[in-house]
Length: 359
Ligand SMILES: Nc1nc2c(ncn2[C@@H]2O[C@H](COP(=O)(O)OP(=O)(O)O)[C@@H](O)[C@H]2O)c(=O)[nH]1
Ligand SMILES: [Mg+2]
Image 1 (cartoon, helix red, strand yellow):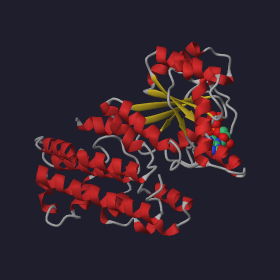
Image 2 (tube, helix red, strand yellow):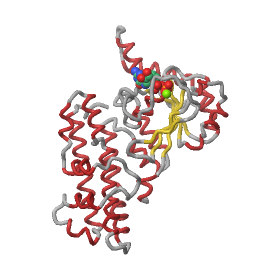
Image 3 (cartoon, rainbow, N blue to C red):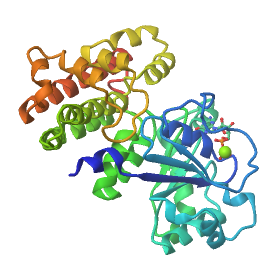
Image 4 (cartoon, rainbow, N blue to C red):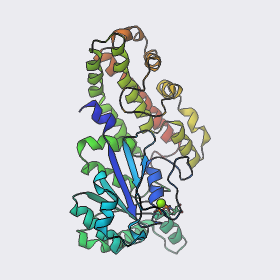
């Protein structure tokens, strides 16, 4: 795998469905934002535009989530609709509905298929259905979910029984958010998987585990890439570039594991445990936070020499080698240490939040 594939592959996700189906809220959760965060897609407002609105993932600008105008908000035919929203921009479509899927949704899916793109049906706002059924006698959550599922599935028969994912943007830990991730991973081309796995919000212990394993799997490739760059004969530059990859890699890791300030605040508010943030003070977490690499611009440009030296100082005896460019083995060691440290911290925090066994 090329390093560029890890850092820079673009992934464009289109979110569509009728007005009010929960598109903008879904766009926000995919970006790890709350509806009232700065830069979040406005929700609960009537659509005034027919243009798709692009939202970059806050830490991974190569992942773009598009809030599409509702197909039901005009009389556009699906063919024209797809042309108008420039369907070729997207890797796949997510079609949302908060009720059963309608003729519009089905026509749209057919047209998407005709254009050889993929679509996934999401039945949104499941928490609403559950809470309104909860009051009834003999309430059985699984039964309610399967009734909703069957009802949606019945409407989609003519498309060859595509799977429907039941999702609540208010609670990603529950229902089918994780299954959607799994299917997307299965069906996306190899190089796009890395982007998806990095950007997708952590929704369970298993999904965190998957991210950890992905980062571990590519340590070898990252070390190799940084070692190759180190032989570029530009004095003073090689060490910085070389280690820039390393710093970027660990910074990606930090965000992907949800260790940044915003993710931790969100989690601690959700489970009402303000002390969670205090647990994120391992040496690598602190190093990344202090150097405040708030936004990653792809590959190596953001890592300054100062940051690199700071990282190296975390490992006794390594700092002095920096000027000469560090070796493959040292890079690999530093990356392994870093990923393990960040992974442990993330797991401790989930456990403290009481989320370990929730799926
Ligand atoms: N309970 C609940 N409400 C939701 C959910 N998703 C969206 N909403 C609410 O439904 C309304 C419409 O959502 P919005 O995202 O603006 O829909 P859009 O018109 O498709 O973009 C807003 O008031 C949201 O807060 C959800 O998963 N659960
Ligand atoms: Mg909207």
